Image (cartoon, rainbow over all chains, first blue to last red; front, side, top):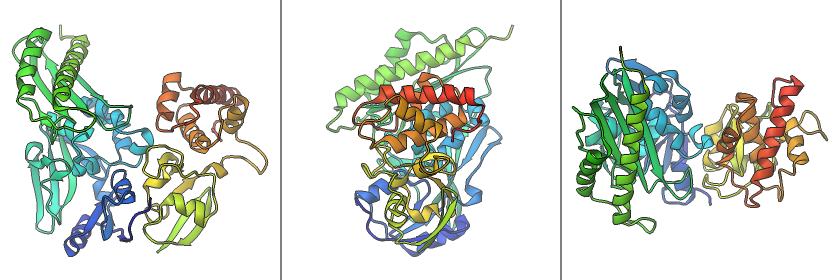
Length: 291
Length: 162
């Protein structure tokens, strides 16, 4: 399995990368390459040119900015996994990262690469959608911010224009005292593509009542989906949560493939979303209330 | 394209097509055949090398992308010709290899693990090698080998998994 021929360049800036992209409609950006290189090996992708953005210094950072954390597109997944800011302020992302492939993949794979690739089963896009985050895309015409819900359009399809380069991902930070998060998925083997994945982050007040709740499912639908389930204002109990989740998941348009039927995906989505929610709740409950 | 690769602390300048993977460059251009060709799409881990010290799939990176980076292969682990590194020795002692195809990848993965965490739990060892497939299914002895190497490292005061 060898790639078809292509030309290679390594621009020093995003501006230069965008100009190169604009000049050749069959050119592709590459960062970690952990999806693109096997796609090329199998000749499912045949770009005429690869524009390597992995070493552009302005694309590698994790920083707190107001009410969210900004992560540069070429930041390695392994770097984010070991980053103290991510561990402290983005518990859902911290829980999701270890589910990506294996550590050798995360040592090369990037945060932005996973988002721009927009595989329906990918973990980072699900976290972004669940938390209601955003991305910033640069083109020769400037920078544009997209909310996650307007960005993921379908399998491997995003709102990035042909001459655009994803430069930042913005993940909202919750500042509540008692936060719990859980990420889980089901696949044939650990590290394989998820048939269904689920993400949950909840915040509880001193009495254990839910004050904020974010839920999402991936792998099941054409793009990662934030579930419209409001559990705030009361303690989270399994019976009510199951009912509300069932209603939300029933309306979803599930994908089908030889591994998992839409009916299976619906059952798994409900089971996993409920499991993630209750684990997140229990984690938050275990954190001490203010006395 | 001219590419400068620093492999096992030796610089090699090679002239390659951009589509040549690091795996093929190491095997065919530098004759470092300890890095094994397996699935060629990132699933099996047979081609594991260290890039700037961290395990990576040599089949999932083109040689041109690795320009200037420090590459470590199985050939670079032993302290001298005819000798074995502590981890290699542990693999021999516990029979941590059968056909040997996955072995270089397993050992490099273990090398990186033990440098980061000199006394990993069994769970950490299993997680670390979960991306390396052994089709002989000899995982039990491979885990034992890494546990043995960790114990010896702790006793040797060597400070480095090499």
